[in-house]
Length: 273
Ligand code: DGL
Image 1 (cartoon, rainbow, N blue to C red):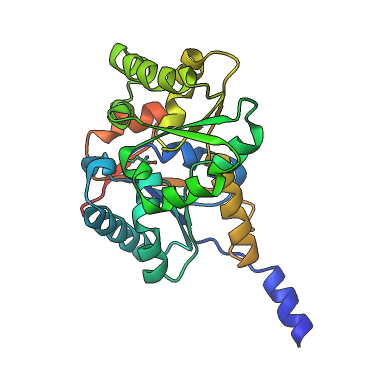
Image 2: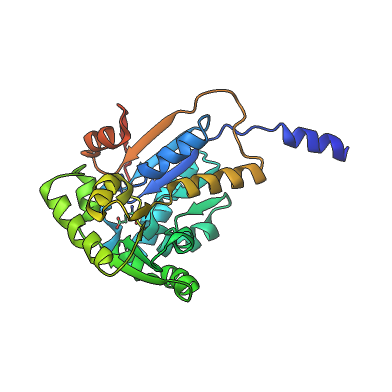
């Protein structure tokens, strides 16, 4: 009997979708990695663009939005939730894990791989003011601060530029120049992208930082962690189908921006919460 249960479990397939959300379109950089690693999973993405950036909102407002979006996705029968936002993870992940009985995977700036990789011993972190002032980040910071020097740089304005899909314009370039130069001038040879909007600016960040600086983003690590949790809980979709993606946004003007960043024509549904 135990053997039979094991065989049944091994072959179980779960075709329910995976929910992913961010304060806006930044989480699409994580969604790309998830789609690549788990091509037959159905993905439901929520961009809370009307409320972006989360970085300048209060903790209670960020938690309230995160919980409301999680409820919206749970009603759509998701089997796992990815919080593709460093700020929402830092502020609201404990509430989400407490309220919902499905795997909840969050972001965390990739300080560990950066600490292992740096040659100069100085790691620079680019993140939103909200992430950098969170308790979760200060715990992460302390964990590695004895091995390497960590310099953090708050980047107000960058999320807004990505929300406009302005990845190379004059204002975006000026902001990236200011933030990246500050870290490089202080000796950082490894830069961590601590916000899911920033991978869309990676080519510009690399160009401004110069060729001896490596730039690390966390999207692929999060996709691997999602795969690990789905495997452990026998939640993978084993059907040989190509997964579909559905999108919702709290802002109607997201349509063009999503098209540009996702590189595909998709329908953006109104979030309505
Ligand atoms: N993409 C979000 C993050 O990773 C941006 C946060 C914000 O809206 O301030 O932190």
